[in-house]
Image (cartoon, rainbow, N blue to C red; front, side, top):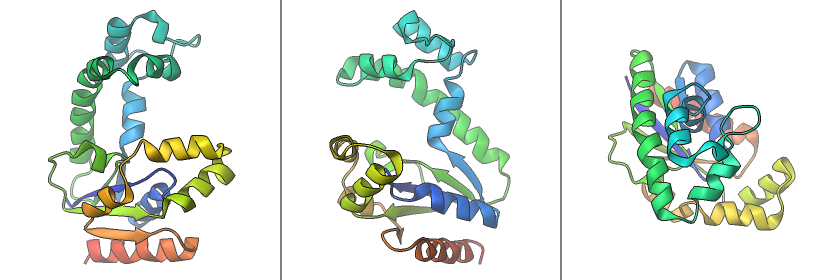
Length: 194
């Protein structure tokens, strides 16, 4: 099974590329969704987080209060390390299970923080969705309703464009039209399925 890592900064167009590859027959495993799935009420990861950080991280609906948890761990390296010790092994095991479940189909792992994690995973191909920071900032403002300051802060907390591009085997330029982005995703698919 070919294993493709798809990464890019916030608002870079990763989801658009992933959906296009999925429409061709790829199995998409979304890293963020995997984390959310594992942190649902009743899951072992949820239970471990509550044991570690207390009932204050449980929202009124009984699910994980991500904002409350974030206020505990972000900016505190020790607390973040405690959270990562719970979440990372479970995510790794679950993504490996999802990869195996795909059989011999092309697997696209949509992983926003690949460059930041500097993981040692051997990918068959690393694909970077790329648009300049200013373009991504404008997308977050117009499409997500963020303030310029919030958008800039999100971008600043991720790897730089140069760091992401340095790990790329393939770069899909998402700064142009949607048609141009989709055509590049189609070209990638034909390359993968050749």
